[in-house]
Length: 87
Image (tube, rainbow, N blue to C red; front, side, top):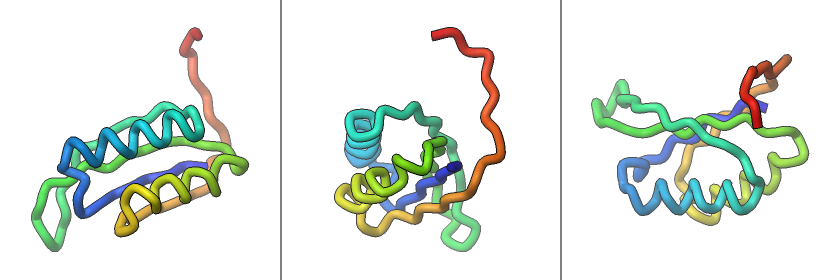
């Protein structure tokens, strides 16, 4: 699953760190942070992008809601994930 998380408070470093920490400790996923700008508000935001499996969705939603109940979360299905990263 492809997940994008945006928050009206996402520019606050403490909140971002809380979301990162919650997701890393709760479901152990990597994240990408994307700089964005709201079309209507014209305000700068950060969007957190993650890819998780279907078993992690409920935990992920609970973590995000606990930290930022006003966060906007978009979830889409992913057909395939491919990477050449060595671990």
